[in-house]
Image 1 (spheres, rainbow, N blue to C red):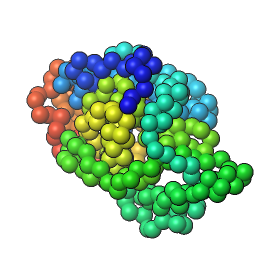
Image 2: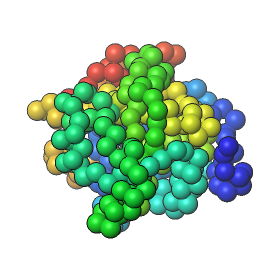
Image 3: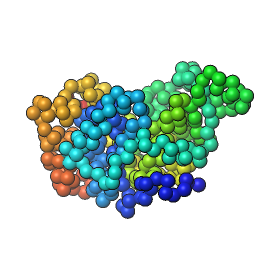
Image 4: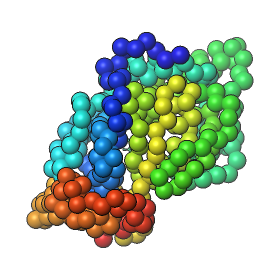
Length: 315
Ligand code: GLU
């Protein structure tokens, strides 16, 4: 049921499986991103997995506004000693692959605006992503072809998967068996751009990713992604959702929170070596000058310590 082998140059899964880091190149990596990248690299390397990098650059408008960011992100990872196997994948070069995989799914056109969805659905239920997330109420699920034809005259449709389930369960290193909602989520936006959930699942599957380490803001997206992987005949990875970095007000750390990126810190005389040491302290790991140094000093089980799962307040 998968598209013909050979359509994708990175299909062959690595022998021990692989971990990955997949930044969106919309702004420089800050301390929180670097911490997640370091933890992902350590989780993968300490278990003899490959480590792959992927640039999630599907939002072409935001990427075009800062075209140098992807290069800077890769340079910053290298500066703290995070290496990787194989070529860096760019999602913007893989649009045809996402389309091929989406053809394996039962889908329908959705003409709803965000506002219509909000009005038609119940109160927020704490599902994937933002606190305001609501399951799609299925407004467009049963439109007749005549109704669709009429709506197409005035609106471009998004494409949703017809999921037919309410929930799915994943395995997470900290959360354990985690069950979360699966609705008829978007696969392609109205402008034709593949949605994050589709691209991430196809890429993780085709890159042979067996371990997804990332911020715990994405824990509630994992059930939808794992469910989708299963539908597409792709292996479901094991998840490691680590805590996020917060600013002094308890909000998720952002670039505007002062000197939180390598270049700003460097300008204050704080080089990559001190940054790695700071990341190590934040996560209860042995201190070293770079990622390979931390790996060499790591004791078994040390990656599963309470500080990895508690929010890190950067002040
Ligand atoms: N590109 C996403 C981000 O930068 C990460 C997605 C993922 O790790 O699954 O937030």
